[in-house]
Length: 400
Image (cartoon, rainbow, N blue to C red; front, side, top):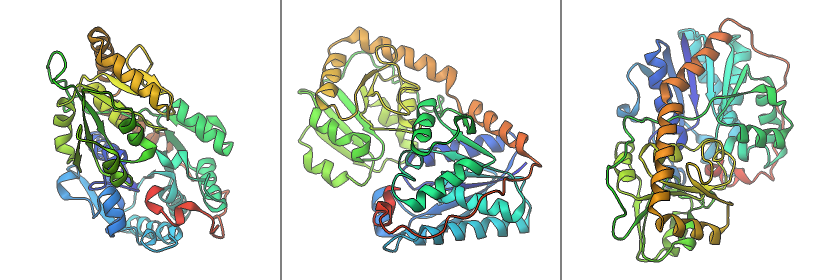
C-alpha cells in the first residue's frame, strides 16, 4: 500500500514522536508498504532551543521512505497561527496524492496533522488513521474552544483512532466525552536489539541515576533534582523548555549531557544504575521501555501512560506525580536493596522483550490500513471556525 504519514515532529527534534516515527516507518517498509512522510519542523531559535530544529536529516530516515519537509511557519509568529500550518499540511498532502496516489493517510498527532489529514481525506476521498500521542491527548482541547472543536472533530470522525494505552484513552475520554469504542489501543515499542543490559553487577561508586528525555517540568525533572538522595550522581540527558531552570537548581552531583544523538542513547542507558522518570503523564513512555530493555530498575509515577507498562513492586517502583518525598523514599529504598533492584529489572527486561517490539506494533497498524483500504472517509463534520485568543499555546506553541 502507498501510505502518506504526516508527522508533527521528527529528528532532529528530540521527542518520543521522533523515536516512534523512525521505527514505525522502518517496519512499515519492511512489510512492503511504500511510505511518504510529510514532516513538520521548527527552524527558529525558540523551537530549536526546546526540541532541536531543522528538516529530517537523511541519515535518520529509514531506507525506502520519501520525505517532504514542511517548516511550521505558523508557530514562529505570535500569536501562533496553527490554522496556517494546518492548511499548508493539507495542501501538501493533496498535491502529493495528485502526483502519485496514496491508499491511506496516517497522521501522527491529532492536531494540527490529524485535522489536516481529515481535510485532505475530504478532498481526495482517501481513508485516514490518526495516532493520538503525548500532549496531543493530555492538553489539546483543554486550552481553548478552538482546539476543543478541532480535537473532538478528529476523535469523532477519523477512520481509525490509535492510542498507546488504556489509561491514556480514559484520560482523553474524560476530557472530551469521546466514545471509548472509537479508540484502538496499540502499545508503544522499543528496539531490544539496540537497547541491551550492560552486564555490570552491583552499583557503581557513586551510584548513577539517569533522567533521559525532554527536560520539562511536566516530565518531573525538577522534582527529581529536589528529591536527589545523598551519595549519588545524577545524569540528565536531553534538552527542553526547563533546561535553564534545571541547571539553576542542580548542584555538583548532576551532569547535564544536553542533546544526546539517538545512536548514543543505548550507551547512555548502559552507563547508569537506575532510571528515573518522575513524569506527570505520558501517552506511552518510550524512555521507560528503553530503560526496561537496558536492564535498569525503573522508578516512575502512578500516572497515565506509565501504569500500563509498570506495576509497582513487580517491574518497577511507582510514586504519585509531584510527590518529592515519595520519590526520594523510593530511590533510597531501591539503592539500598540489591535483591529488589535485580528482581524489578529482570521482570521488566523479560516483559519488554516479549510484549513491546516494533515488528508487533507495525503489524497491528498495517492491519488497520488493510481494513480501511478502499473505504470512504467520514465527511459528516464541519471545519472548526474562529480563533479563541485565550489559548495558552498561541503564546507558547512549543509546549503543544
